[in-house]
Length: 218
Ligand SMILES: [Zn+2]
Image 1 (cartoon, protein in one colour):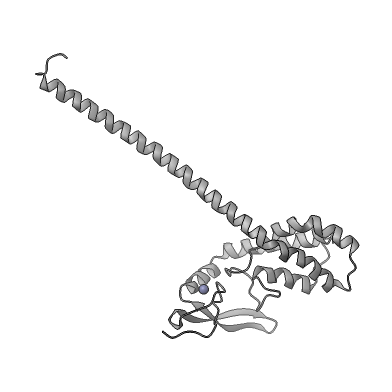
Image 2 (tube, helix red, strand yellow):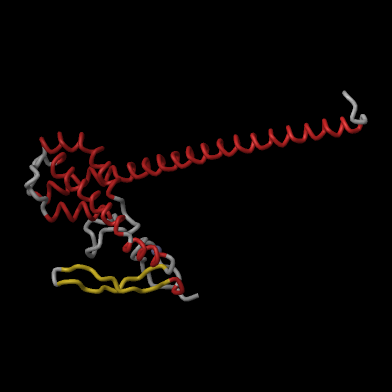
């Protein structure tokens, strides 16, 4: 079986192990020099999911508004900056890097891809570490803005896996709850059906007994 040379899928970020699973697609990306096509490798099964996501504009705009919440929270709640102050490029790249599970995002696409952490997880992590970050910032000395950002990001990266796990556990227990509820409903309905069948059976037995005794009064 032909093996690929450590090629990772652009969609899921996992290794494409077999050559037969590998597909290539040109992806248009916005660069400073205009839109350019980049060749990207996918698992055969991942490409349709990626394309579907691209076409699903609502998913994209939802992600964009979630990114906006992350941006606003970091600027206002963590750094205490006014709305008019934009975040510096280094901070933006570090935050977007989290979205892909990297230091800096590689390439320009940081949406829809199924790897790294979603913006909701990033936002919750920021909220979790805020109470540690604020007093730390008040006492620490930073060489420059980059140093400050990297110091804050150390809190975030130290916590984000734990937050991610807790969110996943919550999701699973919600799913289980839903399943249990559906099952309980189903059980109730099938019990009801059983009961009706029993009653019908019973009445037909009664009729049979009735007939057996010659239709006379029992
Ligand atoms: Zn994949």
